[in-house]
Length: 173
Image 1: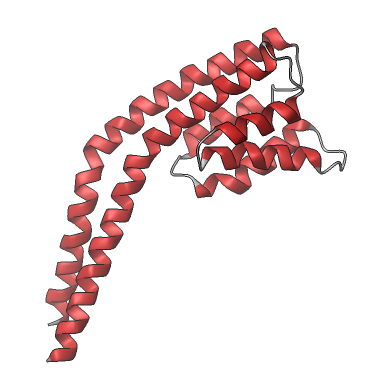
Image 2: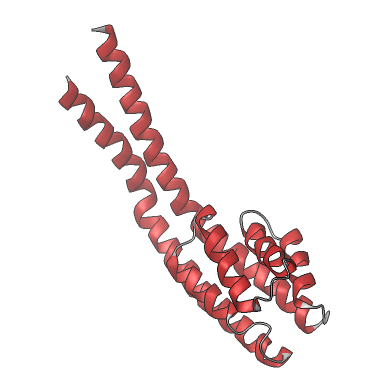
């Protein structure tokens, strides 16, 4: 009987924890999208006004961006410093796809950043500025959608974790 009680407690705890972790991902997504948009604005400043070379601009942006967004830009800077003849786009794509799972952001935001990476370093600063601003507008739309998702699903995730764990406990007994 004591073992069943301990097992039931552990299942309830684990289910509740899973629900809270999922709710945290819903809460983190809009924050990280806003952080990414801010980092792109910083990158824009470095490129357009500072006339900083792209690898240095990425490193400065990574240093000033909060985590996990800073890791995205640092990974691109690291890929660029590995002088193996790859284009900027290949380095950008590789770094983003490798480090993206460490964020709470989803595929739409990844698509925006990959599209941006295909343009950066390939054109003049005015064209890059235009694409950076377009990416900022697209990220703002994704942030609004993420806020809507957060409002809908954050509380539900917490409750669902607890309720499913309770269901498992009931079925165990």
